[in-house]
Amino acid sequence: MCGIVGAVAQRDVAEILIEGLRRLEYRGYDSAGVAIVNGEGQLHRLRELGKVQALADALAAQPLSGGTGIAHTRWATHGEPSQRNAHPHVSDDIVVVHNGIIENYERLRSEMQAKGYHFSSDTDTEVIAHLVHYHRQHTDSLLSAVQATLKALRGAYGTVVMDARDPELLVVARSGSPLVIGLGVGENFIASDQLALLPVTRRFLYLEEGDVAEVTRREVRVFDAQGVSVERSELQSDVMHDAGDKGEYRHHMLKEIHQQPKAITDTLEGRLTDSGVVVEAFGNSARGIFEKVEHIQLIACGTSYHAGMVARYWFEALAGVACDIDIASEFRYRKSVMRPNSLIITLSQSGETADTLAALRLAKELGFMSSLAICNVASSSLVRESELAFMTRAGAEIGVASTKAFTTQLAALLMLVMAMGRCRNTMSAETELELLQALRALPGHLAETLGLADQIEMLAEDFVEKQHSLFLGRGEQYPIAMEGALKLKEISYIHAEAYAAGELKHGPLALIDAEMPIIVIAPDNDLLEKLKSNIEEVRARGGILYVFADRAADFNSAANMQVLPVPHVPAAIAPIVYTLPLQLLSYYVALIKGTDVDQPRNLAKSVTVE
Ligand code: AGP
Image (cartoon, rainbow, N blue to C red; front, top):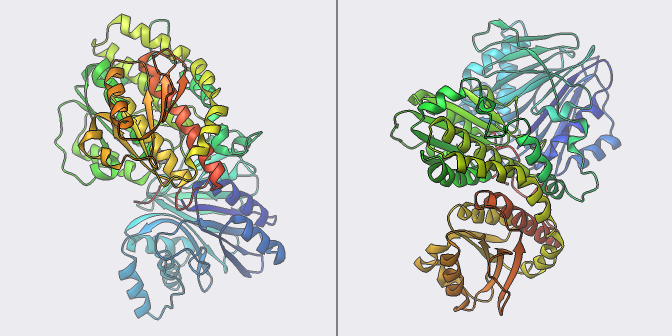
C-alpha cells in the first residue's frame, strides 16, 4: 500500500528519498513522486506513473537538490493510477503526501472549491493540501495549520506536510496509518515503515494514534491528539539492514519460502521447555488470563485468516476450548454476541491491517476479557494496542504473497494451543509431549519438504495454460487448500477455488473436466479414507488430479492422477508442512507465466486502508 519517506538534512536528500521508496516497493503501488525544497525555498516536484525506477530516471534527467523533501508511492484508492493523481500534492507552497483515506473528502472538496481552490487531481489527499494552505493564512505556524486541518478530516491518515516558505521543517501526523520518525545526527527522517530508513538510521520514534510532530534537522517535537507536548520513547531497530535483499534468490518470495525452516526455528527459540511451552512467552499476565478463558474469538484477514482457521480446529480438538473465527472486515460490522470470558486473538503479519486494527478496537469497546496479538512486527499498532502479544520471528517479509509469516503464525498458534491446554488443564501431558516433539522436529520436516522444489517446478508447466483450478482438503487441511488457492490466484492470476472435499458433491463437481486441474492435500490422518472417496468422485468424472500425499500412505500415480510424495509427519504439524508444496507450486507457475511475483498487480503488502 502507499509508502511515505521524508527527510530534513543539511545534505541533498533526493537519493535518500528514492532509496527509501525502493525499500517500500514491496508494499505495492502504482505511481511514485518526490518533492524537494532547497535552502532558498525553491520547490521542485517530480511524479511518475509506474515503478520507482521511472521516478529515479526522471530525477537523473532533471536532478533536484535540497535538504528537505518528501516522497511517496501511491496505491490508488480515489482516482485512477496516473501522474496527476500521484503524490505529493501541492497547494501553492504547501506540499503533502498521505497514506490512508479521507472519508469526508467530497464535502471538503466542495467547501474548498467554494473558497476558490482549484483541484488538479481526483484524489482525497488534495483536500489536505488546500486545507493546510487555507489555515496557514490564519495561523502563526505550519504546525497550527496542520492541527486545524486535522480537525476537519474523517478517516485514516499518515501524512507529512512541507511548506516551501519554511524550508527546514516537516510536520507529520498519524491517525490510523503508521508513521515512524528516524533520528539521525543533525538530520531527521520520516517513513511509513522503518525498513525505508535503515540505510540512514537505526534509532526510531514511533508516533501514536493522534500524534502530530514537528521535525527539523535538530529537533523532533511531538504533540498528542489534544495538542499536549509528549515524549515518545526512542527505540533501536533490530531489523537487519539487508533484510530487503534477495540474496542468491531470484525473488523475495522464493527466498522467503526457503527461509521457513530457520524462521520456525527462530519462532520456537526460548519458548519451549522439556515439558511444554513457556506460557509467559505470551505476556507476563498470560497465565492468569488463559486459566479463565472459556471462548476464543480469532480475527484476521487474508492469509492470516487462514492461519486462524487452522487454529480453530486445533483449539477445539487439542485444548477443548470453544473457538470462533471471523474475517476482520466482517467482524467489525456485524453484531456479534459476547461470550463469557472470551479472549480476542488478532493475527497479522504487519500489525497495521486497518480492518484487523478496527476489529480489535471494537472488541475492546464490546468488553472482551482480554486481547492477544500474534504478529511479526513488534512496533506495530496491533501489538501496542493489545494486552498480550506474541511475536513471530519470521524476519522482514518483502514478497506481497505471505509465506514465512503464515507458517510462523501457525507454529505460534500451535504453541498457544499447548499453553491454553496446560493453563486450563484440558490437555493431557501425553498430548503436550507429542506436540512438543512435533514442533521440535518441524524445521527438519520443512527443510526436507523443500526438496520437492524441482518436481514441483516441472509440475507447474501443466498449470500455465489453465484458467481455473480447484484445491481440496479436509479438516485442518481445508484452510491450507484455501491458502494454496489464494497463493495461486494472487501471483499467477489463475482463478483458484478451495473446497472442503466433502462439499464437492454439493455443487463444484459440475465444474470437473479435463481443463480443471484439481490439487488435493492428502496427509495420513483420520480423514484419509474419506478423502480417497472424494478423489474417486473426481476421477470418475474425468478430472485431472495432483495429489500431495503422505509418502507412507498408500497412494500411487495413475491415469489422470499424479501423486507427489510429502514426508511423513505427525498430524498436528501437517498443515504447516503441506503449505510449502503449495507455495512452491504457485511460485513456479507465476515464474513460468512471467507475472510480477513479488509485487503482483493491484495488491499491497500492508493493507492500511479499509
Ligand atoms: C496474502 O499473501 C496476502 N499478503 C494477504 O492476504 C495478507 O495476509 C492480508 O492482507 C493480511 O495481512 P496481515 O497479516 O499483515 O494483517
